[in-house]
Length: 376
Ligand code: NAD
Ligand code: ZN
Image 1 (spheres, protein in one colour):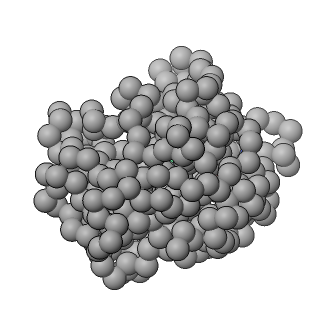
Image 2 (cartoon, protein in one colour):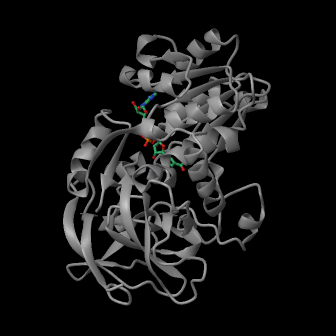
Image 3 (cartoon, helix red, strand yellow):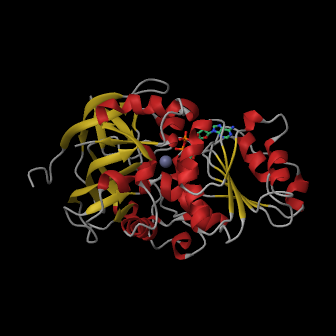
């Protein structure tokens, strides 16, 4: 191909600073170095974690950056030492790597690879090293991926090869939101058949958690959101009860406790708010209730009274739904192709990369589930 071995100039949405609209720029994408893969991104979802970095986390060392971490594309070229991937193959870049060799990769208990970006820069949310420049300046790669760019370069330990028949403009959602929520229910909470569950926050992550609870055989799934527009969609994924905390004067944990004779078996926080994290825990039944933190925030401590845990509740967290990316993502793609998990139902909007700021506004105002941006 004409681009192999050369720096590629392409379009990307650059976040020059926090709280400002992204700017479509021409950036330079370097050739893949040893063990790296250059990917032509075809489509990307917009996830709340992109908005978190732009509007909430705002770490000063985290800009300028190309956001986006929920993409899918095609291998354009590979660097020295890459044997596992060939140009033309369909892939999903992973924001959580799987080197296969570290003690975490060798354990079935976790997906926390030691080589991931989060090990040294979870607050900045981008590794120091990047293959992007724009106007002579280094531009960071968000979560090591940067899918709001027509091309990106990722280490081969952070790429999943997927079924060649997979539609990239849909399976991109498996790069983050859907695997995150689904896996949080199935892998982390380990939802049991016949159980009662509560999911707080009904964005793509929360709806995927609802889908996970449903597929694990939960009997009752209580969907909780401040935005009642989300309830109709939650029904599609298997929710059975709908609660808007604004409709109640008492704490939501008491509302759920009354609805369920003492509390739910499993709860999942998919908002990213420490107050909601506490409510989710305290909505669980004593004795065996399990609550999982999925929403992302690093600004405040979480708190509860010790008796909540002493009484037998378990508080856990989940990154990327506990999936080891290289193993888990291709299986989820297959599950979609076999009609065992839904993806199309999450997509409420499609637009070109140029409209990225509109997609951010939609999410900010609770008007979408997922927008898929096309980069072609
Ligand atoms: P989203 O903005 O689409 O959805 C969030 C939902 O929460 C909205 O429907 C909103 O109305 C609702 N909400 C807000 N405040 C609430 C409250 N007090 N009570 C109940 N509901 C409330 O976001 P998303 O893309 O679905 O992401 C959800 C969260 O998951 C974010 O914090 C994101 O950063 C995080 N996330 C975590 C991981 C991970 O690996 N742990 C991965 C992806 C996303
Ligand atoms: Zn995400």
